[in-house]
Length: 132
Image (cartoon, rainbow, N blue to C red; front, side, top):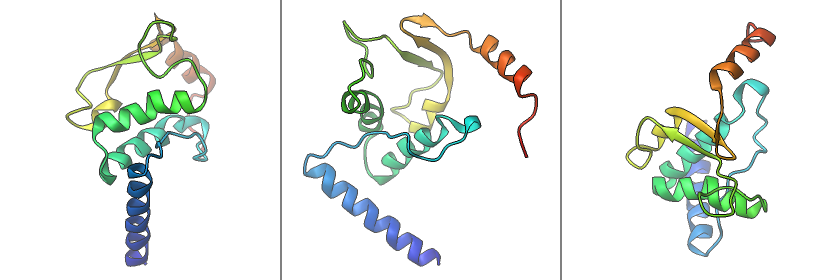
């Protein structure tokens, strides 16, 4: 079975790279079947898979932010005048290793820092343990 999966993965990789070379944009979608405890996690894995497929970390970041926002007609996805100023501050450089994009230090929405500790406390109060 592993050989079948690897063959399918290789075919997917080759087709995706052909489409990208032909000018198709790769964007991040939200149709991954995620549940409330893993929102954002599947997108992170998808971005890491793009790098595994052959995109540079910068290409993966642009695809997941700017290009995805553009495709969805959302006024975010980049830092520029007239944009929403939604961004994250990381503790390590994702251009050196795309997995460093998981090392989030701060989150800003519309230019204001999100109080992550208050959000965590609120969620832990509402859901003290993960469902089994």
